[in-house]
Image 1 (cartoon, one colour):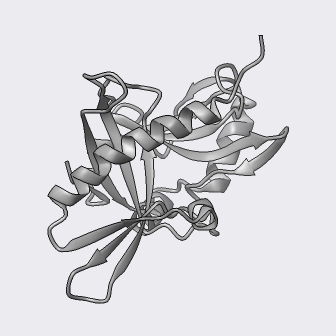
Image 2: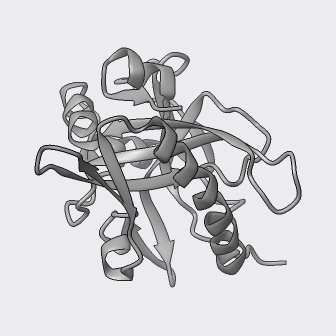
Length: 204
């Protein structure tokens, strides 16, 4: 049996999750209002939500990333997409894609579903995209170093440590060749590591 991409099921989950997220934003954002983006073109550019400052003319573009494969589980890490396959061709993932307009990632973890057809609680970590990419570059983590690492392991499925990152405290690479049709290559980073270096903060 081939690997399947559950696109329709994912959309249904995202719609259900957006109800919970909207209530979290409404209660936790002090100086900002929010507006959900429905324009597909903007969504493809990494914009799911707008955060608008109440007094200053500042708008931030927010890209929501949710661990919907891990419901009722609280993982300490998050997967940042480096590349994936589409119709058999390698495509650049969202982390280093220069065409994305994203200012902040809204990482949604610890998603719990205590009632049928609804999500009841979650954690939200806001990550400053520019600061993250800049910080990774100072540590020597970029497309080139990741490609070199993948060449050295010949793209084998599974977890691969990087000399630039402490595998236990910071992060590592993960190649998904056997469990997902898109065969993504992800940079797995610990959320606590991002918060400690002031690249991220917990909203909820």
